[in-house]
Amino acid sequence: MTDFLVQHQTLLRFGAFAGLLVMFSLLEALFERKARSAKRLQRWPGAFGLFVVGGVVSRLLVAGITVGAAGWASAHHVGLLNWAQPLAPLFAWMIAIVALDLAIWAQHLAMHAVPVLWRLHRVHHSDIDIDAMTAIRFHPIEIVLSLLYKAAIIAALGAPVGAVILYEITLNAMALFNHANLRLPPWLDRLLRAFIVTPDFHRVHHSVEMAETNSNYGNLLSFWDRLFGQYRAEPKAGHARMTIGLEAFRDRHDLLALMIQPFKNALR
Image (tube, rainbow, N blue to C red; front, side, top):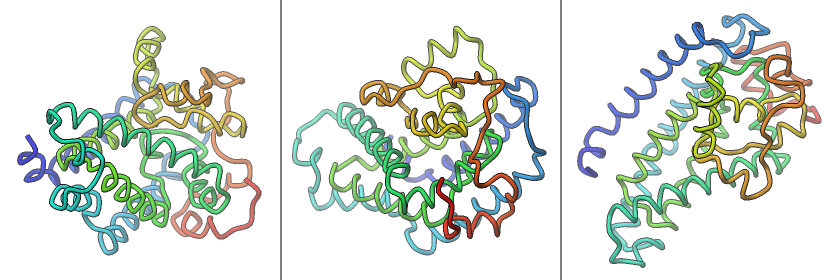
């Protein structure tokens, strides 16, 4: 399993991401949850531009750092899971994936709580609609910092290489899913959100109301927010009437505006 994931990780990552991005974008047209406030052409080019720039910058600066950290930890017998040997591989993978998800949840909370980090992360939150393309709208500096943080956690944890690759593929897939502007049957949303983050669950987090923005930080597993008291079931205005985005950034969504946004003065 590990050998397969390592040998084919580029194809698996790109194939899953590209395929799901197209699939969710098409499904949004058929099962739209919330009416759009702007045309796609006003928002999508800037988001895609950030995705390209972020990909280039991360490859130049920190290419393969997460899988590399896992390989280094294994080779040097570093990290909690390596010290706790012998562990059944499946058990080690499960612990690693759950622990990584908690670490990413904590990082997300910090991106909102620390002012200098919020300046970067608000690029993501300034999207005035939320759909699958919002999942790729991250500032390149945030992407690099996130990869460095994740690599440090992976090394400290001693996460298996295969578990890291599987988690990253799953996390990217879930980001596309929970940002998608999809209308799920209420019974299905209730069932899924007991375990994972659904589109309705995450949409609350993109509300213009800061009390709602500062909630529902989950990425993959939904129970972290309940456990740490950060969960909101629904937006106060309801999903159909809620306003998405940030009050201070509602006009420009081109690549240049998004790149310089962290350096602009705005309270939120």
